[in-house]
Each structure stands twice: as C-alpha cells, then as structure tokens.
Image 1 (spheres, rainbow, N blue to C red):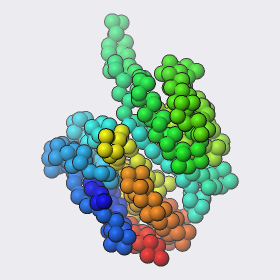
Image 2 (cartoon, rainbow, N blue to C red):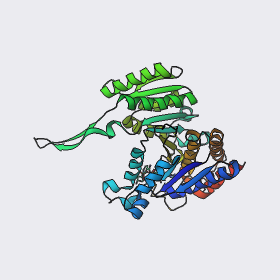
Image 3 (cartoon, rainbow, N blue to C red):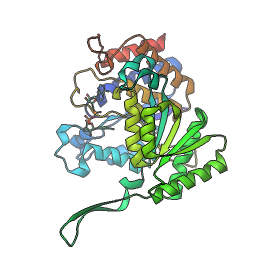
Image 4 (cartoon, rainbow, N blue to C red):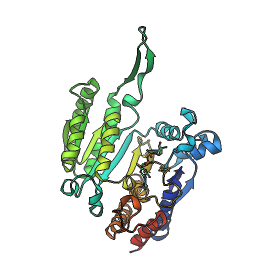
Length: 365
Ligand code: NAD
C-alpha cells in the first residue's frame, strides 16, 4: 500500500537535513520497493513569508490527509519581530493541536561510538535506550484559567492551571503500555501525587488501567523530581517513562542530553487512531533550526534520518526497513564518520551531504 508522506522542511537547517532524508526515502523506494508518495510544503517562517501565516489552510489540509508528516525545524531571528500568533513556532504548535498529536515519543539512545559525547561517565550511559512518552496537548500549558492579572493592591499575579481528565490520562498511558510491550515491558509513570491532586488522579488512573489491561507490563510510579535525579544517577533502570506535558518537557530534555548530541535525536508525535485505524503522526528531530550554522552545509542530518526510521516503525509497520536504517546510521558512526557537532576536537569531519552519502553507502552495504 502506498503511503502519503507530507514533508515540511521548514526554516534554517530544516531544508538541508530534510534533503538527506529525501535521498534516503528515494533509496528505499528504488531498492526495497516501498510505496511512498511524497509531497512537500512550507511551514514556519518560510510559510509566513509566502502566505502571511506560518501554517496555511491548504498545508493543514494536506497534513490531515497524509499518512505521516516529516518535519525539519522552524524559526529563526528573521521572524523574531513577527506577532506572537504568526511566529514560525505558532505554526508548529497549531499543527500539533489541530491534529491532536497528544503523545510525544522521545527516545534517548546512546550509540557506543558516541559514548564520549555524553557528559556522564561511560559506564552510566553505555547501551542506554529509554523512551520518554510525554502528554502533549493538555496539562498546565493549556489549562484555564490562565493569564496575568493586576490585584486590587496593585500587585500582579500570573496564573496557569494544571488539568487532566481521565480520558486524557488513559490515552497517553495506553501509548506507553503498548510501546513497552514492544520493548522491555517496563513502564515508569511520573507525577507529583505527593503535592498535586492532578498527580493523584494520574497515578490512580494509570494503576487501574494497568490492572485491567496491561498486567503483563511491569509498572512503577515515581515522583517527577525523583525521576529527574534518577535519570542522572542510574538512567538504565528505565525503559518507558510516561508523564504529563510539563514534567515531560523537562525530563525529555534532560534525557536527551544524556546522549550528548542534539543532532542525533528523533521524535514522534502521535494522535488517536480513527475508525479505519489511521493515526495522525508527525516525525521530527528534536533540534531546532540552528540559525548559527544554517546555510553552511555542516548540519547533522542523522536526527532527521532517524525520525524517518521511527515513521517506518510506528506509522507504517515497516520494521525490517526501520531496523536497516538504524543499523546504517550506527555503522556510519562506528566507521568514525562525524559531522562537527558529534566530532572530538581536532578530528576530521564531513558535511551534511557527505553524511547522507555515508548513510546511503551503508544501506547499500
Ligand atoms: P537549536 O536546536 O536550533 O540549536 C541549538 C544548538 O545546537 C546550536 O548551536 C545549533 O547549531 C546546534 N544544532 C542543532 N541542531 C543541529 C544539527 N542537526 N547539527 C548540528 N548542530 C545542531 O536551538 P535554538 O538555537 O534554541 O533555537 C533556534 C531556533 O529554532 C529558534 O527559532 C527556536 O524557536 C527554533 N526551535 C524550533 C524547534 C522545532 O522546530 N521543533 C525546536 C527547538 C527550537
């Protein structure tokens, strides 16, 4: 079955890294006969320049129709004075909200060849492979009431509200349990039930769901602050971590830095499956548009290439192809091929296109 993929390269290094992803997809179409129809459109600052908005209605329509979206990155200093709701980042937030991409999956994997890139001791992170599942469309970033008000005494007060409903907790917990079944069957659920009612509800609902449907998976609970500490102390104790929007924001950034490089880490954002089983999904590197190196041809395309591997695995069920692509990336690293961001000082490096060449050569091999 042919899959419709919408490619949104975005701004800065986005188009540079996505060009390498395009070559990889072409390789799988030509050499493995994978059926893919690829369309490309604008998002972010470049869309604002063309359409006056960071996400045009026609682009959103194409995103809804696609089987999966591959995104580069958005933003840059050029658009720093643009009104808040027209900023490049607003286009990305709108896309996530409109497609209800409530589950954000962020793997933190340490490749043996990049052990030295982590700031932690090699024995702490060697072989690390954890998955953070963050709730993305509710919680304190969306709860009402919110705002900044002036009190009668002239003092100002900022308000945000943490809210979660049963259904919001259950659907994200389900994603975590299902993922754990494909991995080491271990889920750690993180909240602050010691001080927050929304955390109490979170823990109760996750516990009930586990007993009812996922007793084959090992479930543990942890306060989010303890999890932040454990991620540094002994990260390999975790397999899948499931948590809310706010704690997930912090914990996933912390976990990503265990690996030492932003240019290596992919992510997936998933919505709910419809009656036909189709699940909205967007795959993107966790890094931004890196304006400091945009146009220099030195950006690391591996996070974007690994995002395509996640798309193969989670949207299309193309497991052997996902494995092949991840192995190709690993063998490139094992061969010592490095873009500047992952190179030891003084060592020879390659540019974005040469890294793409190396991945294609590894696939051929
Ligand atoms: P960034 O991730 O763009 O860059 C941080 C640092 O990492 C920079 O030094 C950059 O050169 C380096 N870097 C990032 N990706 C790299 C890669 N693939 N290869 C080599 N080096 C890489 O974060 P920032 O500087 O805070 O943000 C820049 C812009 O990107 C801002 O406009 C921000 O809003 C936007 N942003 C977008 C996204 C997204 O599109 N999902 C995410 C984060 C930031």
